[in-house]
Image (cartoon, rainbow, N blue to C red; front, side):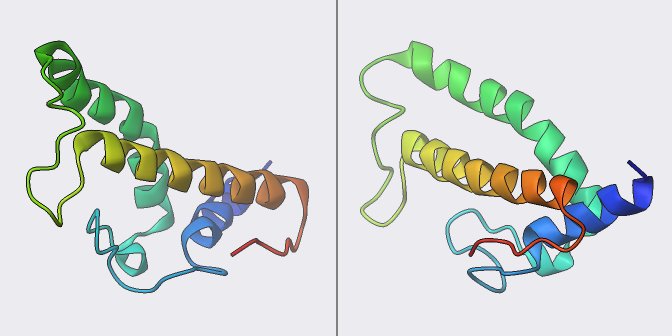
Length: 107
């Protein structure tokens, strides 16, 4: 597979068929500002970022990872579930992009 298709695919993951526009109100990522290489780098960095952030919370006990800091702010566990859902959605799109020349991407 050529690098052009990978770059195009990374761009399509975020732009084509997007459910929302602008910055995500929960995580703050604004897909419209990401370049294809930014998208790939961001996805590759997620496992180590989440591991570094969540490991201390998991070992702290007393429900710290599941406690909301305030009524309208998600807990670390809720943010992690949001990220997992988003990654599942991105993976479905990536599989279609790699398998088809002009895929119809789910919303």
